[in-house]
Length: 251
Length: 251
Image 1 (tube, each protein chain N blue to C red):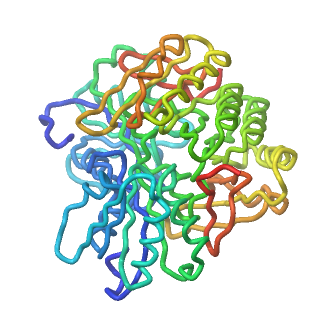
Image 2 (image 1 turned 90 degrees about the vertical axis):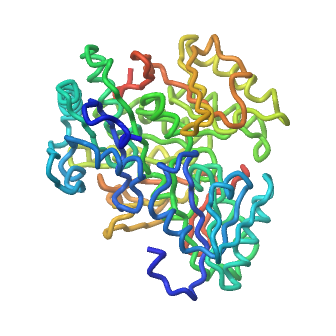
């Protein structure tokens, strides 16, 4: 797709690299990277891109998403073919929304060719590695309370549990907010049965991948870190040999 | 990964083909298909696989998921290298849970090499095509009431709306249950503001792709069919030029 564009075209693509394995990078994302003049992203994601002549790598630190998005728009406006790389899927707690926030503040860039290319998001790679715990209705919730008050987060988790939805939690725990996940576990212990299955999936699809499934009554906050996606089963989620899965039919 | 296995290995892979575009099929899925002796799946998905010597294509009709899964396990037990193909991601309202249901009824197959390979699920391809409407917390709900009572479905949608979650609806409407989606829209009209944005994304990533975004007060059941994924914004979801996006920060 991108390969057929004239070399003078200027564009911004926000591309999902998937959770880590090169086997999960889609061909359209690889093609956009191959056609780019500039790659922008968080240091560990840019480190996944092979350097080559004609390609400038712009690696930036975490928590500068808006600056990074603004930089991408400027580079494209100056004639660049710019890929903003995200882990997982760019539309799930990643760079796509940040790009649109930057665009809202700088509408002069609205006429740029801007595209979002989806990727394998961490919860779906984690679910596949575990079996099929998200095979019925589920919710996807970011446990970081940087961008929303804890009360709203707590309310969402409580309502989703009352709806008997499986849940995927992103960014469950960090050094700057070590207690949030423990408080969320307390809410789950009120709302869900003690035998509810919780899978901690760390560094999915990488050589460091580690999956651990426990019942809710045995879950401890320390089982999660920032590289972990947490999958909470619904009332029907079960173990089957080495697999965890949720049947298609509701209980 | 699969390419390094000895030719005698027997296995079952449930693989996600993504929503339609070959540019969204991951390399690990393509490698599994290249290494397979048998492909099993619903007719239109099997039709996406190129025939070749040594590969048997088993296409079956819709609504026979359990039979299909059982067939895959039998073929693998007999020495086959079997790929069950799913649209989108196999773990999201697709064949992965069906395979585990079949396995639960036939535990003699538990020692088979069984793997789930994730794919780009329709809601994330649709979100990328629209912008980033799922860029904040969201829920993913199957509107088919074949496998759950309507009351549970209604309760889930109501609670998710009260949680101010964006929502993705799969299988919103079919000839056999033409009224469900209209009843869900009525629930949304009670729970959400009239200007809530709803995107109807049909046949995403295919040549027939069609995206239409309307406000909740203008949404009509006929805007959806079985090839449509419906994305309902949260209270912060907005239009920005030709894009729909949800900011990372909660309102």
